[in-house]
Amino acid sequence: MRHLLEIDDLAPGEFARVLELTADPDPEPVLASCGVALMFEKPSARTRNSMEMAVVALGGHPVYIQAAEVGLDERESVEDVAATLACYHRFIGARVLDHSTVERMAAVGAAPVVNLLSDRAHPMQALADLATLAQELGPLEGRKLAYVGDANNTARSLVIAAAMARMEVAVAGPPGYGFDSATVDRIRAAGCDPVLTADPAEAAAGADAVYTDVWTSMGQETEAARRLEAFEGYTVDGALMAEARPGAVFLHCLPARRGEEVAAEVIDGPQSRVWAQAANRMHAARGLLMWLVAANPAPAAASPAAPTTEDGRR
Image (cartoon, rainbow, N blue to C red; front, top):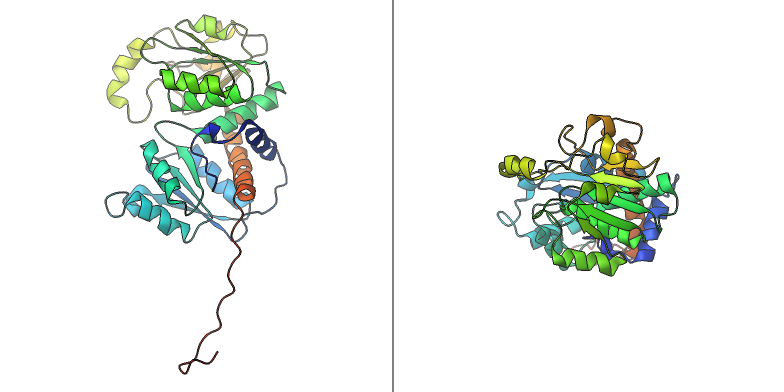
């Protein structure tokens, strides 16, 4: 059974195939008469809307489930919730607080699981990001991506995906907010030796795309003041974009805080592609679901037994 818990659960060729399917303007209704469970421990605008509409576009029926409705590890174990949802749904998508939750769901083996965001990874965003870059830049091999800011879950999936596409990658952030050694090893294993620097201008120099994310993510609100101080000087503004190649594009997964990680002149300016990214969340979700259908053929349905009378006759 194939799941998508982290972006490199896909082999490079599979990753490329998902991007091809993302661009399909007329997909077949491969989820006709199928349900897809979408369980959220954390709220979301883009993830919920993009996943629901992707399922609808493929002929399926999405069901939005709040965490309180299933009571993970309180009313029922994660494993029992996954087994229950698999009774009704072709796939389970989950946006969770702890990555181990999607791992436990997948380990049940009852239905393919898609990580809609965890504290460790955001593979659906990475698919949309690379689809956007491919639209803007064409073939991605040898192109340079600069990421400036907090090396969070979104950045981790993004950089691994860029490595799988054979892009060059540079990451700039203050000490203490970079990737751990295990993540760097994973990026290298995916095909790229990233430039890791504390200098945003060094990272952005010659880049085809500059990407950032909020400095304080959901759940880190108590760290906001400390993070504002630590990331001073890491705002993506016009001067930093000028370090990139002429015509370079700006990306941000949203929501954004103008005046913190990005200047309004950049995110609302002509180099910004943030709304194309947002739109591609839906297309990427559709492409992934199409791939997962092919990778996880549904078992043949058993013929229903004819009703039996009290004396045992059919």
